[in-house]
Amino acid sequence: MRRYSILLLLVLGCAGKLRAQKSKSMVTLATNTPGAQPAEEATPPPASPVVYLMADQMPAFPGGERGFQQFMREKAHYPEQALARGVAGKVHVRFIVDEVGRIRDAQVVKGLGYGLDEEALRLVRIMPWWTPGTIKGKPVWVSYTMPITFRALE
Image (cartoon, rainbow, N blue to C red; front, side, top):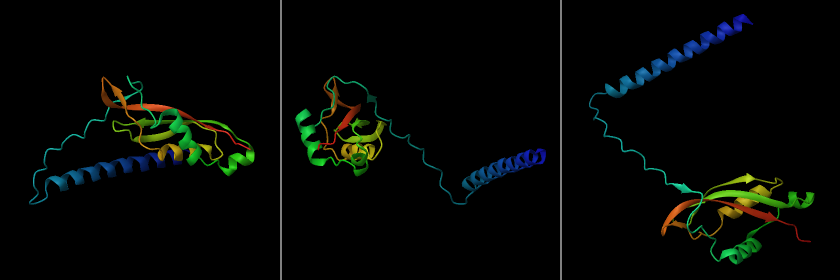
């Protein structure tokens, strides 16, 4: 047992030295390359937009509740796996509505399994653009959590 721990320490020690040598050589190559132009000053990446949890005017599906219900009737497909097992209920999906109404970063926060989670994500991803949320009249990014209800109609 002791031999293994010593061997492991030797391997880890060597790996650390190799990394240090690699990083030194990489720096050396970058600074000593003949004819290399000085690097331009890097511009900082653009700041991430602020994502609000609440807004003066929350984002809305085009056509409101009635439009959402119609969209669900036309586009939803009940997974065979869920039908066979009689699974029904709500899948909660969180996403961001950006300043122009696009849906971004959809993810299931509470699911049911049996293909229903994947179907809920698919539905959110194919939704038309929403009316964006606003604060003081300006469109903003808003995080939104939506329950999608699945009921098998027989």
